[in-house]
Length: 327
Ligand SMILES: C[S@@+](CC[C@H](N)C(=O)[O-])C[C@H]1O[C@@H](n2cnc3c(N)ncnc32)[C@H](O)[C@@H]1O
Image (cartoon, rainbow, N blue to C red; front, side, top):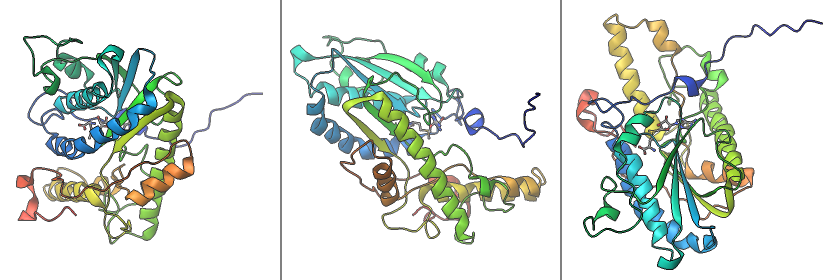
């Protein structure tokens, strides 16, 4: 018997094409990620509080405390995250019980890990007289061993029961793929918008449900019993319907549509290309996130909060001077 591989249409694997711009030039992710830094700064007190309140569950870590940042990106933001978590955990341990720290920086293969590792400050686990503010400056020194792990966080990436603390910021809104039913849709809308059919919004929510569930299942195997996870992602306001308000993803999609419109008008991009292009992201609301975590069943939700007022991007480049496009 001969088995012939099916000739179905090749699927564009998002994890092989999605990538933030590397390097440290003006338009690189490392330089153009102030919106993500704003989000990190806004959640910092909540992250620290979550660590103080839950560390008691992990008093015995066997000498090594392991942290992973999923969708870590590159540049200062990544170092700020690692520093914040390590410092908060450290202050929860007595000096004589202080574990060593290991941080896994996790992202897709396209991430500029080289830049990240070049930016890593020297490893100095102990205090030094010369560098007293080192603990608060993520670029001065670090008190953790750094390791990079490449791969999609929708799959298992780390050994079973190896992680004590899992973090992710502005990454989980990226989907595994554009929902299949939307891929075939020809429209100048690159995402959900008020004038789309309701089925488009439903397909995005369903894809997010599937992807986030896969993320939770993978982490459930990697995190030790009693371990914690702290996730922040761009979301919609509480109680909102996906067809009414699309949150930060809707804001970004509208900028992309404006850019496409200009490129098509200038004859640089064909109209058909614009109309076949869709963005693989989704802003859920807190009810949607919470119900997926409950349905998956491996984790208990201790705290969910929707933060408003985080400026998404520098507004100077917005078309039509519309500063209220977000929210
Ligand atoms: C907007 S950046 C955020 C980076 C960083 N967390 C920060 O706060 O600046 C989103 C990151 O998520 C990563 N990402 C997207 N999908 C991913 C996936 N399936 N697995 C791992 N990383 C992913 C991207 O490569 C990118 O580096």
